[in-house]
Amino acid sequence: MAKTELKRRSAAGKKRLSGDVTKAVRAALSKQAAKVVVLDLRNTPAFTDFFVLCSGQNQRQVKAIADAVEEALRAAKVRPAHIEGYDRAEWVLMDFFTFIVHVFTPQTREFYSLERLWGEAERIEVSDEPTGAATA
Image (cartoon, rainbow, N blue to C red; front, side):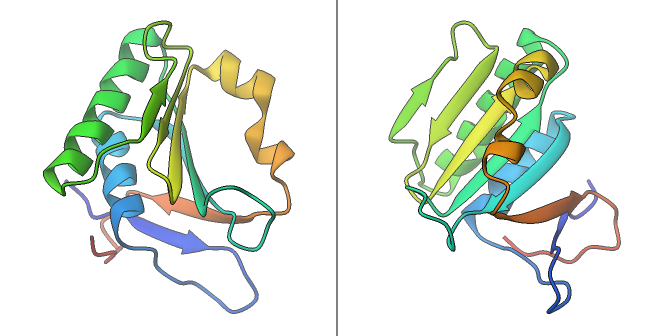
């Protein structure tokens, strides 16, 4: 699988993001998650440091993405404090304290538009191209 590169859009240039957030992103991408974005909320009045946002094309894929994220982080001995929405699988929220993973169906993601709601957050673009060298 191609290495995942996470790039911050900022005047300071490109930076890489590593750790558990990167593990979550890689797990989501391994299940073909679409429109993967990380929002850096550390400079906002948010209750967490990062949001990982991604979409699955249908409820089955949303569950597969959520399962992959949970499994990848469990292997790193990181467990979510809370999971919501898994049964309906329109929007699965996985709270890992310092970051939250949101897995949406396309319609639900568009309706809630968290990227717009948290517009002041720094947006970290995700690329699964092999040029990246992000480390976990």
